[in-house]
Length: 59
Image (cartoon, rainbow, N blue to C red; front, side, top):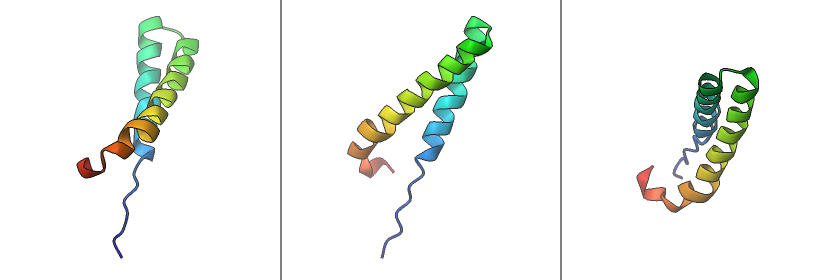
C-alpha cells in the first residue's frame, strides 16, 4: 500500500504567517496583522481546496 503524503498544513501556516507580517508591516498596526492573518488563512484554504487537488502530479 502506498503511503499518501498530506502536508497541506504547511500551506496554512505559511499563508497566515506571511500575510500577518505583510499586513502588520504595511499598516503598522496590530489590527492589520490580525486582518492579514485572516485573509492569508482564506487564501491558503482556497489554494489547498480548489487549486491543489487538480495538480496531483506536481507533488
